Image (cartoon, rainbow, N blue to C red; front, side, top):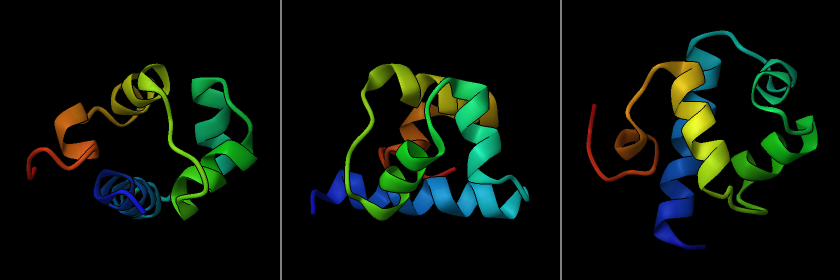
Length: 72
């Protein structure tokens, strides 16, 4: 697995669970299916730039943190 994918999937799941948000809620908010969010969290696939931006906006976090370029 790509190191960026590993960091992204870990941070996505961590942020989501810390905030008590389900995969379905995220999926609806950014316009993807629940299975896509699940695939991201398990590393089965990687998101493109558009959903990464939508996730960062949804969680009000820096994209660089979400993809492992910096610590929060």
